[in-house]
Image 1 (cartoon, chains in turn green, cyan):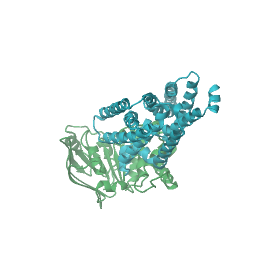
Image 2 (cartoon, rainbow over the protein chains, first blue to last red; image 1 turned 120 degrees about the vertical axis):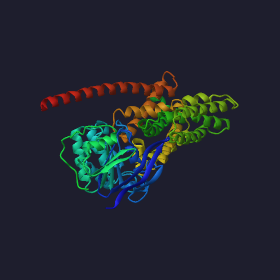
Image 3 (cartoon, one colour; image 1 turned 90 degrees about the horizontal axis):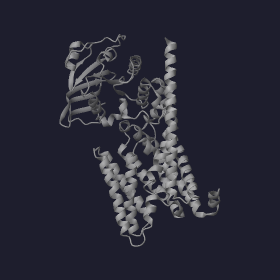
Image 4 (cartoon, rainbow over the protein chains, first blue to last red; image 1 turned 180 degrees about the vertical axis):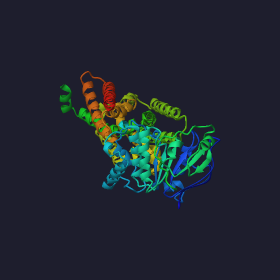
Length: 250
Length: 289
């Protein structure tokens, strides 16, 4: 199995505070990794380091064997909602098409080509937002917007998909749906998903990495109450959401 | 209908009309980005700092509009650079640029020998004094702005909508941010003749803000804002002609009134739609149970 992401002794300090400490993590090709941890545990920071938006204070980051900023074209990123305004005047199609920019998928000057529109239509169909493609993003439900963001990430044919809290703003039904979609996508790409919902994502991912400034646990099996206690620093009751088991062999 | 008779017979009124319509094109296109990117304050800083360049050019006996163009571009670079540093005092620095630019302009104008009749026309415009050479300049600047947006519409949209995503797609965000501000600077200069630098911001933002209440894409906002801007300048000019009011302020008051009415209408319409949605949800859930 070749490595898609390699972190070696990565630390990140922000205004004198150690946000990430000594992280070693390797994500293999075709893996579906869940990254969990409490609020302010450094999950989003770690994603930004992997995306090359932040430089680690120490350590080495490689994505597809190269520095992250050189591998961005192969990465599809689905941010939390916070990075743009929901009332921005843009339709689902136009937002998805923006994912074609950069990386040589489309020409740099002027408008889109037929191939761009075809790729957008395919990505929207796959993420099941084709029916709402003409709607302004402000009129979508949380689940629909999340799927539209997935379509925007898919439209550039990434080999690695990174998602930051994809279920933070949607209800449990939509959550199951969207993880079903991720599992299908995982058949052709590596996926890293950040979540605060430990109990839920263990049903879907191959492997869970638990982060609280440093990697606390790192395992393939089910998460036990003991591990969560270690992670959150207090006893937490594991609630079985009653979803069907979706753990794949790694 | 004596305004239209006057347009038919008076050359200067025809120039004024053309200037107003040309200025509306730049304002509609660039103003749309200013509104959706919410950088009205940055645009205001650029517009006011321009007086510094106008005053210096006036003092040196050069065309103040060229001084305005140079000053606007310099101000755009400063504003763009400061806002990209991510400092906490961006607003303070822009306020300083805004006021110091104006102060420099007034100092130079006051030291220029002769009768300082031009100060008011710099500040509030003098559309009736537009000469054919101004029309050529405004037209050329329009061509630059429209060409830039035509070529890079998608990149401008990407950095305006979601800067982080644009960066991850490998779009040079800093460059396009600066290019957009440079286009704002050029647009400001096209409008100075029409409504003056103090009122520029209104013509830059109000048509686009109104348009944004009715259409759902930046491209359509541009088209509608351009039409609205043309309607305001032509309408304001016509309204000001009979009672001999200054044209610039009449245009702005007209635009402001329409914005007010449109916003009230938009608010009521949205409330109604929300109520309808809530009702539909309620009836659906009762039917489902």
